[in-house]
Length: 437
View 1: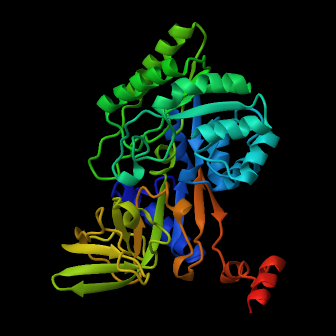
View 2: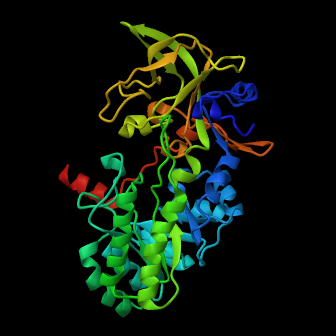
View 3: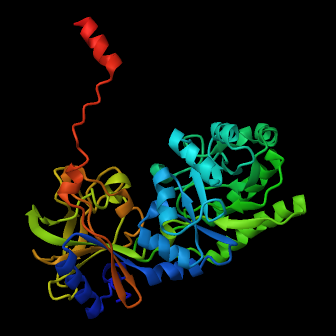
């Protein structure tokens, strides 16, 4: 079972994998997500050169996947109060270093909660430093630094530089050292995540920027975090990141800081999609094959409310088709675009950034066949919505020789239950309206 998503991920279909997809479609209905725990664990092993691997759960926060991370010694990063709850529910402990909260602001409820539970905070703004100091003296903090430059395959995945909202601007660091000391906060380390994708020349620049940030701050640290953004080869022929080289470059920065302060410095990494992207796929059913001029639209029952990445920033996913018997669909190639059922022209999975529809040379499936979207384990289910009043879809995990329903399909009753129509008229507002009348 462990290679089921290879139906699309590598376009090499083992008949047993196709049979599993068709069996699951009959059991849980389409569309559905399918994840492979073994593939996640292999990705974790590639990063063991770091002292701490901390999963950025925003990539996929399903409790089943969080428990897989925990059993493999991977710690957790949370970016919201809800993600804190997910981590605690999955068995992570508050108050130690199991869990770190990372954000650019605190909402009031989250500020109170991290203070009460003693959860270390990765501060992305000077205001966060002041706010945590005001209610939790001695609190452990990290600083997320914006070094003045960024990197990413899209403007929407670039998390550094003057056009990014993320992190503390590097020029402010000299004033923050005395501020942290005066507040009595416990500085754990520095964090620098500048965007997705890896280019080794750029990586060297980031390492140098971390050293510069440390010197500008003027305080000792116990750890540095390389952030995330490790690349995933979404396209056929795409290159895999050399994790040994990546570790070596960050270790050089760590050693330079350690030598300067003559005290140990640990090295963390915070991968998200690197751990889960290739472990997941989206399975949908083909519901129409439409000829448009000399091209074809294959329309499936999953939409961008399920997999938003192509519509959001033109992301590429390999796509394969499996027939009702579980065999890979073959035959002559045609120019094909794959689209969803939403009442939106942008509901197309084969599009580039900017919304240009792309037609790929693919064999034509027929109605009732299954469409498998590869490398969809990251920012797939996590970004899903109820747009067009569509319930969230099931998630299934392959774990060795076991299959688990990690999330059942949402019902319309559950969706409608939130819409109570409760009267929230405030007395002061009602009185003012009556006065004006």
